[in-house]
Length: 355
Ligand SMILES: [Zn+2]
Image (cartoon, rainbow, N blue to C red; front, top):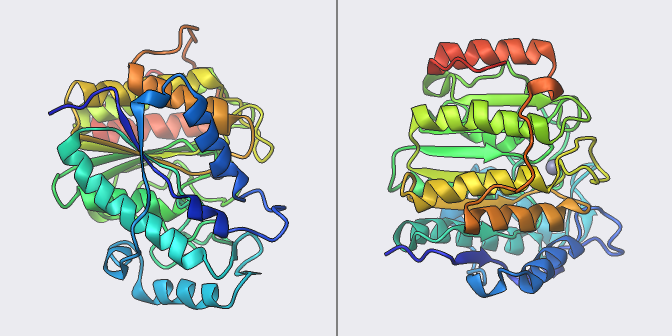
């Protein structure tokens, strides 16, 4: 039965144990605390139900990550607080917290197929830069991430359904996720990110290989790209690919650092972008076009983490776009990227995008 109007939030306050001593790192406990406070105080609070995390199960972790990498994280974590690369810290709680979120995301994604409720995972740290064996596609670091929650959600869903559409609108390229699904073929991964920033991957010519060829869709945006560009991507790429691919489920890497006021990036998305993406995904679920919608919070280090997220949740629950109209335009995408994107969409999907 469709339990519409409610959203399941995966959250456990023990995330606070994964922290740098002075909260100086941008990925610190205040992020998830701000998210939860905003959700609890929001107009949707009565439509949200919260579930804590389960104990870690290593059998779940190795569905996405190599056993050697899982052991590495466990070992480094046991040494206490230190940096495992120039961006990424661990402490004695990191393994347990990230592994607990992985395990819970796995089971919650499976359960969502029965409940039909949209799921929002509020993990720490983020996950989309973590590839099968850690650093992915030649990235210099793990980019604050440890285990990949969006990937485990998709792997769980693929036990029961055939096709998953993954969207990553975090401002950074989801290189870990692409590493995991590069030649999978059951997953389409559309990644919208700022060109030229960390991790330096995600060019439009990177399209996956073997069964996955054409199913990796990278859309690098120029600095300053905002709602017009995001709405264009939603209308011309995401919706058109979804209409052709006909996914059974949607998994979203919902980072909110493409927000205009984020301190780490130079994109210019506002609440309009997040509301409209949420509205589309909510509509797919409400119309039974997909049987599951799992969103996982990734980055977001400023105002977007609250205003972007609340508008995204609003969109999912109300299935209504933002009242402010935006004229869709690919102006925030360089011509080279537009031309190659158009070629790829035509070649692999038979889609004539209006560029
Ligand atoms: Zn990010």
